[in-house]
Image (cartoon, rainbow over all chains, first blue to last red; front, side):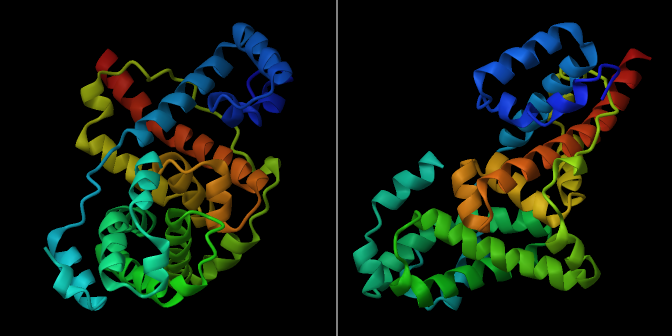
Length: 82
Length: 203
C-alpha cells in the first residue's frame, strides 16, 4: 500500500492482528515488516486507536424515560412500570 | 457482553416460555437500553429506533416459545432488532438495497490507506470532544449498512465474531472481512478529521 510490495498483502491481516488473533507465523512477518515500514506502523497504530475510541464511546445504556413508558404500554406491561 | 450474560442468568427461560408477564418485563428491563442504543446507532433517528425497539420485543414475546436456546437470549434479541433496523434502512433507500445485498466479501474491496498522519497523541479533550463524537457517529453512518451492522455489533456492542455471525446469519469469515473493511474506512475518516486538528495545533 505504501511503497513496499508486501504492504497490501499484510493489510488483510490487520484486523486479526489488532484483535490478537493472528497466527504466530503471520504475526512475526507483520511485526518484522512494521519495524521497516513507518507508514504501515501508523496505519496499525491509528487503526487500533480508531477501534478504541469507538469502544470507549460509552453512552449511557439507560432508556429515556418517555421511550421506556411507551414501550411498556405497547407491550401491555404497564403494571410493571416502576 | 459480560454484562448481558450476567443479566440473562437471572431470567428464567422456562417462565418466559410459559408466558410469564413479570418475567417478560424483567427481560424488557434488562435489554431495552442496549437494543434501543443499537437501533439508534444503525438508524440515527429516534423515532425509527423506538419503532425497532417496540417491534423487537413484540416479536420476541410472540416467538419466545420457539426459542431453542442455541444462542443466548441477548444474541437472539440482537438478531431480531438488527433485522428490523436493516429493513428500515432498505426501505429508506431502495436503490441501495442491491448494494447492501450484493456486496461481495472479497478482500479486493478493501480501502487502501492513504492518510498517514499519526494523530493518536492529540489531547484527550480533542479526541473526546462532542464535536469529535458527532463526527465519529457520522462516519459510521457513511458506512454501507452491511459494514455498519458488523462494526456496531462487534466493536461497539462488544459481541464476539461468532456472536456477530449468528446475529447477522453470515459466516465468521464474512464478519471478519466486513469488520476489516469497516475499520479501515473509519480509520481513513478519523485520520482526515483528526489530521486537520493536528495541523491546526501545529500552526
